[in-house]
Length: 127
Image (spheres, helix red, strand yellow):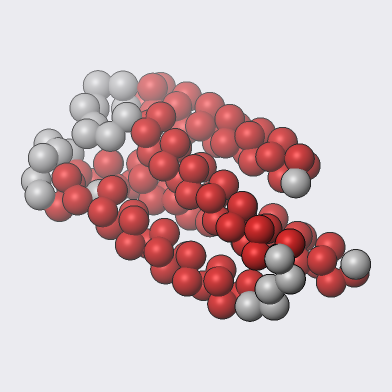
């Protein structure tokens, strides 16, 4: 569990740092609706919640963790739409950069989550 948290924190800091550097270097004059920290807080928080829920279910002896992962992933997609509602309502002057700023970290975090859960499930099978 603690190795996941260290990897999660390192991954979040690395991706946020790279994203912030690229955004400030090339697109500093562009006004976006969502600050980068809020996008990363949302995505990193959801990954953490999903991992904790699955870890809790596995510790209780549940064997339906793959179904749970699918339900949680669909829930994350729905929450992403809710998070982006201000863009759909036209509150952003530049909605395309906002959407790109959101979905690049979203898919990177999704890949990180899948990779880490795959490792977690492999460890569980060997026990």
